[in-house]
Length: 426
Image (cartoon, rainbow, N blue to C red; front, top):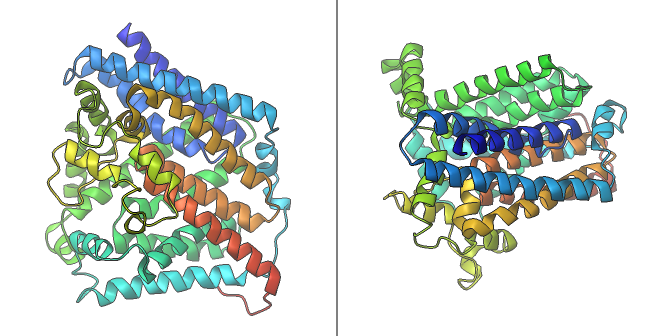
């Protein structure tokens, strides 16, 4: 029965991913992330790994299957009640409005890039000498409301410009590609590269007529490529600075480290083990079972220090403490399934209903847009958030959309009002 359920959870997650792929909804990125980080790996773990008992694997499968059932039934009901023509709209996105007056978007994007580069540069003696720890400390030293946080949010909200120029088949997409790549290497955060992955997958998704064997093969190959890049970035960070890598590192050493990560289950594909750990200990940890992530989501627009302890502490830090992290801000992001279980125990299966509603809301927002550029910006923003959420950094992913969407809506309103007619910014 354990093995049957392991297959059933894989079948359910795959089915939902295929369903969302056919809709071309940005939530497909959440389910693709769950498929890679839990569905497939959990299936093989059940057969070949005995780090935990079969009972634990059985419970993990049951939880994920029930979550999927609640999600899919709610999603199907909502899409029947509110006709979902997102597939049709995105398939014809090239024919939508292509205004020439959105120069403020491009200007804001590059201002954000220049500020982020300037901020990192002034915080270090040399770009080549700055380490991963330095970048982390710089970010941690900033207040909730600061220029750095504002420009960071603005930057990620506008990264969809890369997708927009892909849709237009405009050569300027090369400029945006290398700018985002530069910021990724500047910060060395894996999430900084997500906008590039999203743009390449989304443009393929927009042009997809139906799911064929060749489509599945392309997605599988791209998934392996993304996994390799994610692990390579992590391995590269171990060298500290770029100068250290130039002196001591090599591609061969990076590959060896990636193989070691995979063999030792150390990395994104190994995060599921903490789901098993939480189940084994029946959530018997500080702050578990209180729904802290979702309370924080409700209070997303209120800084923690201004809520008089109503807004609970960052639950990712609570999960980090539960697995033995000693760093002051050590956090753990063990996939959406594990986060739901850690937040509400077995009642977490009902959060599948909530995520179906949020998926429907993101689709409805996109359907109401008639501007090509804002569909691309919002699609990229939602997709980025869903990937981060699927990985288990639920509040951070939700926060990015909760703040980024108003930013984009403001740009849309402002651009339409003043009708800028200035020289193009490339």
